[in-house]
Length: 142
Image (cartoon, rainbow, N blue to C red; front, side, top):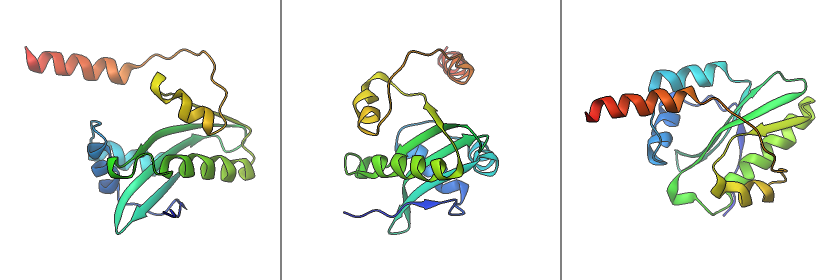
């Protein structure tokens, strides 16, 4: 199956919202709108009018880029969509002059990102989003 990646395709933020829900993530349509408007770039794959893959890029456009929120619709996982998005983004951002790429991911994705050419390193993160989300869920359950 051949997938065509588009850069800054003018996606409707509701498409990203729907994809987030499809992969089991929380979603806030207003937040998705702001992310699309404020990102350096984004890469997407659409099949039969449905967003099946998405990658958001945060960057200074000069030296560094954060690959953020890689999502692949469950029906298209393990079919090369994620790999195509990551490799296309790295190639195009390299042409923009970016030299350093970073991302945050769960341990089970180490083989995937190694396959995409990433060297796995230790790092740290303060994850206020998940802390706030987990506290809100706990309050709702109480």
